[in-house]
Structures are given as C-alpha cells and as structure tokens.
Length: 93
Image 1 (tube, one colour):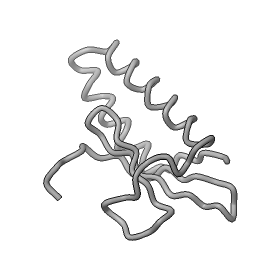
Image 2 (tube, rainbow, N blue to C red):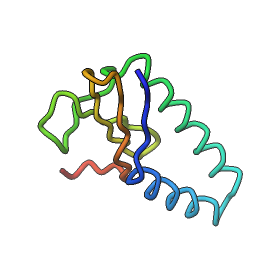
Image 3 (cartoon, one colour):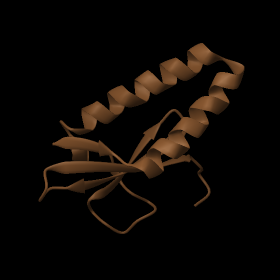
Image 4 (spheres, rainbow, N blue to C red):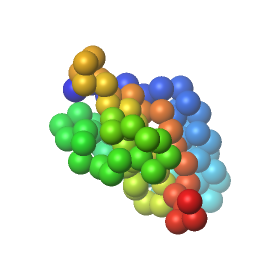
C-alpha cells in the first residue's frame, strides 16, 4: 500500500516539531524521524493499530506514538493509506 500524507497532518505535525525544537532541536529531529519510520511501517500492516476512537469506521485507525495520536484512513480499493490527523493523546474522551 502507498502511504499518502495529507496537508492537515503536515500542518499540525510541523507545528509540534517547531514547539519541540524550541527547547531541544535534536529531540525534534529524532521525533520526526521516528514518526516517519512508523508511517512507512503502515504500508506493511495497516490494520495493526486500533480502530479510531474518534470515528465510527473500520478503515480509520489510530496510531498512538509517544503521547500523540496519528489518525489515518485505509482505502483498500485504491491500495492507499491517507494520514490526516495528528493530536495530543488524552485519556479523557
């Protein structure tokens, strides 16, 4: 499957990277690289993460990573994964 990163994800992700970089630029670079590795891994096992708690759709999934939730949509008919959401994880839903 092809992983497609949408603008909605990029904007929020880049804002968070800038915030982290204010304190420690090397931590921002490591976080960015770690997230990119996780996104590449989605192509191999897209259904390995939990069904989204934010949407009622089997093909929308939440990847929880270091206190953040990366939300993506699996489009099996197009053999594609769209990464569109990036939020700070919260236990209060």
